[in-house]
Length: 362
Image (cartoon, rainbow, N blue to C red; front, side, top):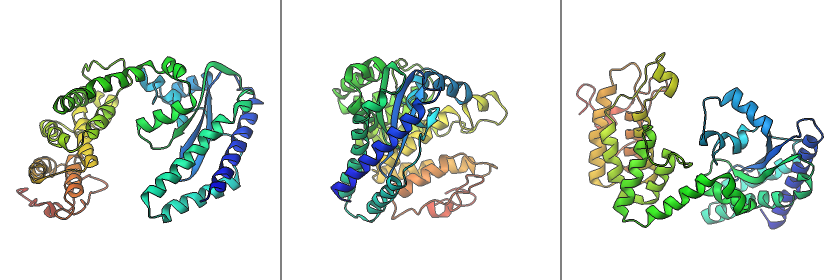
């Protein structure tokens, strides 16, 4: 991929977005447009233009998001600013030439063996969407916009920090603060916590993980914060967080994992209990951190025996055995193979490979 290829991508993307906006603006739904976004997948080479109106947002909430409230609706990662939730997604006629260049780009990424080069090209792909937003001023004039109208690039499958960074590249700081004061407040909280000793940081974010997962009072209720945000901060602390995280997993792994179908708990929370969601989240966090020593290995082995024995005779197993086995394989791949999991019952199909006997689990 050469510089002129990206210049062509930007031109074609601008053309597609302009045509999409013109088509929408000529219709009767063009009223109180509060957002336009280019949904961008730098990993796969595609862009999707999308917008929403206040009426469209209300329709989406009534139809499929009635149970959501607060930040889940209007926060930075809520329905209101998430392009796939917009009433008007994948707008306008598609460009065959743009899609062909996107395919050429994604093929190049797959064949390029240099990680730094791949990241450079992914950034260039995203930058074309940013430039397109900046060049669509005349087209935006065709829309009946609200006073707080925003236009931004929304990345597919990116972390919160990346999404925030891209949003702020095309939205003025004062407007961002008016829209998401809770996000600003959370960033200030993170800065304050980062000034503490590492042990206190780990304790704080672990406590937030637990409280937010178990729906307990956390002190962060007014902020746009989830247990996933707390875990992200734990993961940033690296290997020193693994042992404390595992201690919490050991504390909650023995709790009831599955809600009974047909009960109120199942209707409100789904298949898994809050304690199970917490355990699953933290196990995935350990896998993401990617560190384990002999002590961690032995503790995970003991934990696997415990959760395997609790689940092996059940018709439907919880996810704890498979996730602990995944952690062992991920951290110690030379010692433990990839776990084989039943697609219908969630049971671990190769327990002997993890030192688990059929009867005793030892």
